[in-house]
Image 1 (cartoon, helix red, strand yellow):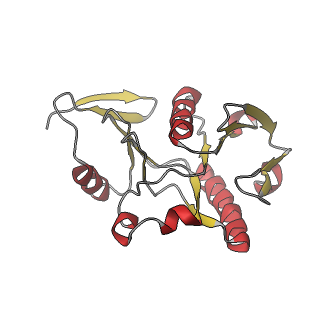
Image 2 (cartoon, one colour; image 1 turned 135 degrees about the vertical axis):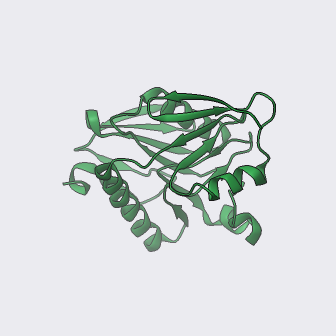
Amino acid sequence: MAALVNQFEGTLVLNFPDQSMSEDQFFEFCQLNTLLRIERNSQGVVYIEALREIELSNWNFEFCGELGFWNRKYKLGIAFDSSGGFRLPNGAVYAADAAWVTIDKWKALDPAQRRKFAPLVPDFIMELRSPSDSRAPLQEKIAEFLEQGTRLAWLIDPSVQKTTVYRADGSQEDFGFDQTLSGEDVLPGFEVCLTQLWA
């Protein structure tokens, strides 16, 4: 299976002009490369990212901790870190730095589906921009999640101390790190101020 290889801002891009990997082949490929973050868009183009800088990893851990604490308190769904893959209805397989789905969506999956990339659209996702990341690919990825059914998405950008909130109705809003972010009606009761979280 020949692939055209490109590199874009630290991301390795594999293009398969003849044929794409099957779902099972792609899952197996990811399991053989667990130290890499591997995603695939709806056209079968594979994106491979190396490990991230340690400070960003810490920030992501702290955010996921807050989301997990809220989720344990309210018990409305299931939360995920950046290592889990979601297979969207359009065929793309993406991870998010943090994600959350309602309990009803999770219960609708059978045990076999939970052991692979879940055919599941998260209700909420968060992407944390690295200084080496361009905003455009992250914005495109978030737009794709929203098109497929995600209801709320946050793009957190430490380099400019700003979070852009994207909603299913197409609206978006910017918040400074000193402002409190709200989970709105998707994550009721979830609030976080990034300045305090990452002090």
